[in-house]
Image (cartoon, rainbow, N blue to C red; front, side, top):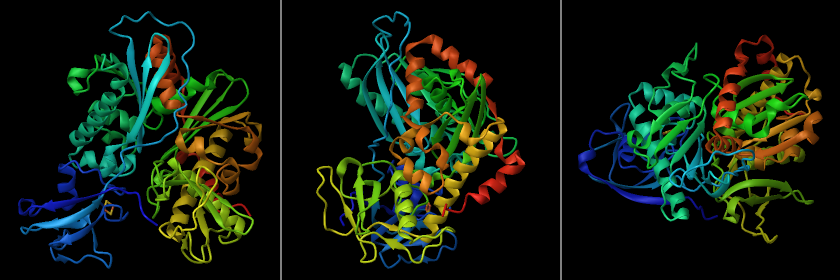
Amino acid sequence: MKQMTPEIILDVPSSAAGRRLSDWLLERGIPFRADCGGRGTCGKCKVTVLEGEFLRSASAEPYLPDERGEILSCRALCTDRPARIRAKLVSGQGLTAHAVQDAPGERANFSLEERYGVALDIGTTTLAAALVDRQTGETLKTCSSLNPQQRFGADVINRILACRNGHLGDLTGLIRKETAALLSTLSAEIHDKQIHTLTVAGNPTMLHLFCGVSPEGMGAYPFTPAFTDTQRLTGSETGIPVQEIIALPSASAFIGSDILGGVLSCGLAERHEPSVLVDLGTNGEIVFSCGGRLLAASTAAGPALEGANISCGMGGVAGAVNSVTLSQEGAFLCTTIGDAPPAGLCGSGLVDLIAALLNRGDLDETGYLDDDVTLGTLAFPAFHVRADGSHTNEPLSAITLTQKDVREFQLAKSAIRAGLTTLTEQAGEKLKQLGTVYLAGGLGFYINTESAVRVGMLPECLAGRVRPVGNTSLAGATLCLCHAARLAELETLASRCQTIDLNQVPTFSDCFVEHMLFPE
Ligand code: FES
C-alpha cells in the first residue's frame, strides 16, 4: 500500500561533522517526528541513508543502517564526509474537528481596527485557529496544523525536559512561528486586513512555552507553574502580526485554559445535575460539575490516543484510519480521514481496532495478542472503504498493531477510566448518577462510543449519555475574543476550580490496575 507520508531528500554536508543528525534536521527547520524527545525509544525519527555514513552517538562507532537502510537520527552523529538521507516529514495539515460555537449575548462595539480576531488552541499535537468577526461572533475561517514542537517529544514531559536542556527559546520560537503562519493563512480571508487580537488557549505547559516562560516547575513535584493568570503580550514582542495577545488563564499545573474553555463553552458550571467534561488528549483532563462545585483532574493517558508511541500511529490527519468495523465475514472495514489511502492509525481508529479484535476473540481480556496483527494478511483481511461506499481490494499491509501497541493503549484507556471513576467518587457521586458526559477534542468528536465502552474506556452505564462537543478549547477562546465578560467568567472559573491530584487519592492506583483489563 502506498504511503502518503511526504518525504524529502537531503544532502548532509561535511560541515555538519560531530552534530547529532536530529539536531542538524532541527536547525534546518525540517518537520520530523521525535515522539520520545530523542531518547532512542520511539523509532519515529528514522531516516533512510542513501549515501555516506554516520556514527553512533553513544560510542562514535560506525552506525550501520538496519535491513531497511534506516537509522535513528537522534542516535546518529554526522561525519566529515558528505551524506545523503531521505527523511519522512510530519504532515502540516491537521483535520481536528472544530466545534466553534457562536458567541451569543451582548457584544462590545469593536472599532474597524479591532474588528477581526483569531482564537487559537495550542494542543500538544495539533494547533487549531479560527478567524472571527468579533462584531458578529461569526467564525469566518478555521485552519489547523501540527504542533512543530513535536520534534522535542510527543508529550509535555519531554518538552519540559527539552527546556531543562536549554531549548526553551527553540520551543517558543517554533510555536510563535507556526502561529504567525496560521494567521497568515487566515488573514487572506479578509484580504489581509489587520487581525487585532489573538486569544490563546492551551494546557499550562503549552501556554508557558508560547509566552516564553520556562515550564520546568511543572516537571516535578510540587508541580508549580510560573503563572496561572491571564497573560497579555503584544505582537511586536512575539513577532506575531497582531496588536494584542491574550493567553487565557489556567487553574493549576494540570488544568489549563483549554479544558476551562470547554467548561465555559459547554456551560458545564451552570448544570445542576452531575456532569463531566472529558478531553481525551495526551493528558486526559476531566472536570466534574454539580451544584456549583467544580472539581478537575488530569490523568496521564500518554500520547497513544494521539497516535504517538503506537508503531503505526499518527495524528488525525489525512490518511489516518479513523474507523474500523467488522464485516459479517469478519474482515476489517476501515475508513480514513480525507478519504486518502490508509497511512496509519489515529486515536479513534485504534479504539475501534482494539474493540474489533476483542469482538473477534483475537485479543483476550488481559490484552494478550497471539501475534502482531498486520491488517490485510490472510488471517486479518482488511479493506479501505471509500466515502462513496466502494472499497479497495488492496490489503492494508502497511498497518500493523503490535503487542506493545496494545499495552500502550491499555495504559491510556485505563488512565481515562480510572480518572473518571476516581474524580466522580471524590465528588461524592457515582458514575451512574452522571447526567451528561461531554467528550471534547478531536478524538472525543470522532470516537465511536460503542467501541469506547467495549474497550472499557467508558462504563456501559454512560453509553447513552455521551455528547461529543468537538474542540471546546477553541470555542472557549472564541467566546473570550468576542466578549470581555466571558474572559472575566473564565478567570472566575479558573479560581473556583479545585484540582485533585489523582496520585494522592489512595483508591486511584487500584482502580487503574483494575481497568487495565478489557471487559469480557
Ligand atoms: S527514537 Fe529518535 S526521537 Fe524517538
